[in-house]
Length: 68
Image (cartoon, rainbow, N blue to C red; front, side, top):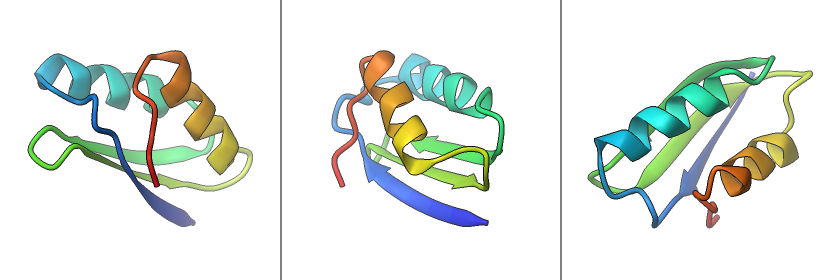
């Protein structure tokens, strides 16, 4: 199991949190997603077949670009 945390400066409301959690949660291999409005971070626990690149690409697609 791999855990990674991203800074996502564009998180500004509860809707952002919900969208991120739903979209990343749909990726096969992702077991846990926590998005935080307060500190604008997203923590993801995953294992193959999910990849870090896939998670980052999904964040970009939904207009929440991550910053490491």
